[in-house]
Image (tube, rainbow, N blue to C red):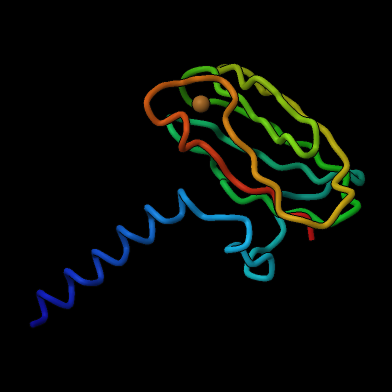
Amino acid sequence: MKKMFFLLILLAAILGCTNRDKMTKDEISPMYYSLSGKVENGVRIIDVVAYKFGFNPDIIVVNAGDKVRLRLTSLDVTHGFKLEEIGINKRIEPGKENIVEFYANDVGTYEFRCSVFCGAGHMKMRGWLIVK
Ligand SMILES: [Cu+2]
């Protein structure tokens, strides 16, 4: 019985992980996420690491009105950071810090994706920017 319970928990965890890949904008509740990075001289600075196949963090949270600086690095190959609704598409070259700056003007949840094909899991490389 105990074993069965454990298996159910494991299954739930696996399904939970899989579902996160398919999460839609409406399933993200901004109130559960705290602000990302640190503010220095009026700029919110956030480090984001790209790897095969994901982003860390994959949920980035800022305040509306923030000036945001993303410091993008790659652990392996060239990736991309595309945030279409804000007009950002930046290559993330490995071995360097790739900087993106923008103003988070409008409250909302925005999807970002890898925009450089990087292998079998490329389509899974995505995350969310929450402006609250
Ligand atoms: Cu990629």
